[in-house]
Amino acid sequence: MATLRLKSRRVLKKLDLGCRLLRFVARGLLSTHHPLLAHVIPMRRCNLSCAYCNEYDSHSDPVPVQEMYRRLDRLAEFGTSIITISGGEPLMHPQLEEIVAHVRRRGMIAGLISNGYLMTRNRIEAFNRAGLDHLQISIDNVHPDDVSMKSLKVLDQKLSTLAEYAAFHVNINSVLGSGVKNPEDALTVARRAVSLGFTCTVGVIHNDGGCLKPLNEKERQIYYEIKKLARHSYARVDYFQKNLVEGKPRNWRCRAGGRYLYICENGLVHYCSQQRGYPAIPLEKYTPEDIRREYNTQKSCTSFCTVSCVNQVSTMDFWRDPQTLRVTPRPRTIAVASSLGGLISVQHSGATGPRTGPATLHSPLWTRAKSQSVKPR
Ligand code: SF4
Ligand code: SF4
Image (cartoon, rainbow, N blue to C red; front, side, top):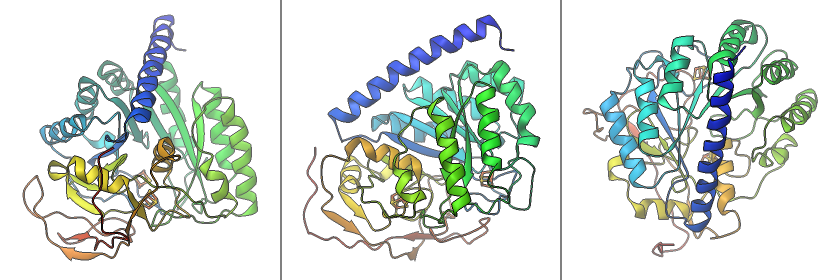
């Protein structure tokens, strides 16, 4: 059981976060010049190897903390509101708490996505001190199987420890459509999350291009049951999933590269985790003009996109600024020096499984629908 002191701290933190989120919405509505959310990767390596995942390797080193500070400073200069840290498995980074503290020092909201395996009471308390705002743990099944080891039976004690010691908001996310043997496990996970006082959400798995893998009838039913449960615990912008669950395309404006930035372990800016390689510009060379260009660029992969954070962020501007530029991603191979020295090792967006590839980078050939400059807004 959490102590009275911790419960009071949670209430204060919730109020503080609520105020900062209001500021975030107000700034986002007033100006389209800054990123709303940036996703940073301090650690590509993961301690697990989920069968559906294309976002990890088994060998890479943590990004040095000073380099992470430089990237966060650059994102703060752009006026970024929220930083989400993920991986790989970010808890494998030995100085993750310092990175979180730096996000908060620079006035940004700090979120973390983890598989939870390495969470301990000491680390939870360190994250409390660092000012972590939000943690999301994804759990795919009740018992480990050959698809996923992100299992309730393995993680339940970690969840209890979080319920006892965490001052930050905890959300448990389960995934449907990943080929996990028992899709009804997602409902068991959601119920356990709510019983511990956490919020719960359900995600729809994407393929290697960020697009939909159709849900079967049983998965769809479970999706709607979890949504009912989640409604009582958490409000978030996820109406975009409804069409996808029904297997229908969506017409929306993806603002990746403008309002949302994905910064890989090599410090390159990409559209999202599933479109790495576009535009693949080093963060230190990314400019406000790049942000405006990408804000105005229509992507060719929107119809069945399930990358939820970009869908959510793009909602802020759904009513304005039709996109007049187009990009048709067609990878070509170029070699680029990374900010850490040496060549960058990034595979193109169609890569699957652990990354073991050579030091090459894939970058787009741009096809503009109209030849026009992008005006500041
Ligand atoms: S889904 Fe998460 S835990 Fe699983 S391999 Fe990918 S990064 Fe690791
Ligand atoms: S639509 Fe946007 S978020 Fe979705 S896969 Fe394409 S670039 Fe990524």
